[in-house]
Image 1 (cartoon, rainbow, N blue to C red):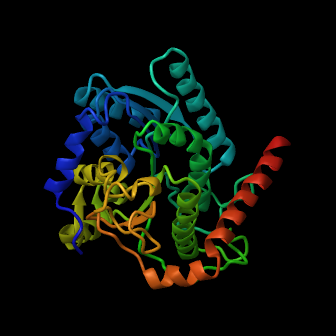
Image 2 (image 1 turned 135 degrees about the vertical axis):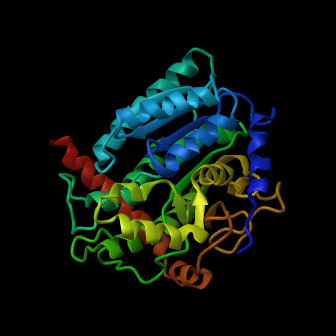
Length: 352
């Protein structure tokens, strides 16, 4: 399994206070009011100097709690909450426009560039039912796991480019299922309008994320794109099922999964490492000649700019599977489909 020990991870994260990173790093956390997004927000605040932190989520109450905890970790952190339902592209665009306006205002005052250093995507949609279509014609679960995440990247790419042009980190992390669900997807039904199921949604979202990240890394060599699989995280997620009749089952399950669990705080530190402080490991494509010991990307090239990473920050994934898809032009097909969906949604939203 290899990867990195927690002490190695923390060693990198403490470097965020070094001069080379400097003050004012900008982190945007989509799904940052709970789970892995929340714990990575706290890790970012813990290590960065005077960071600007944007948190996108649904719960004002959860954000208020997190904001108080962040201020205790770093009194100089500047937090902004943007409530949104990310299962709709229209909401994603609204949030992006708000952030861009704020960043441009900061730039106009001469207090920093309009940029994003870390775009962290953890937003999800809890459902085990069938297709739940939004007014935009997308399944809400698949929108949160794939389409909305790609829309955030598309909208914020100029701000990532600004960061990269200033020799600052420019990183995208999508927390999903790297190294899992690697089996054939239906290229005639990528959006699963005909063959939706929870398992197909998981498979399509995961494979399409990796393929799209490869395409984005080729197009945007100043940004690194990382698809992670966090494994089992001790985040208290089982508490939502903790009714009286479920207690015996939950108790037994907690015992069974304990050997494979990653601590909540550790998970945040590991995602900060892969997303920001470990920029010399998961390098942007343009920097691969500078860092000879960087990690191997999804296409087998060291420093390709697109990476699939497991719970211990180890490289994961089936190289042969993606090599086959790559030879068939799958990445291009996925990106063409994704951009086509965006155009259709834009037309639809113009009439709503």
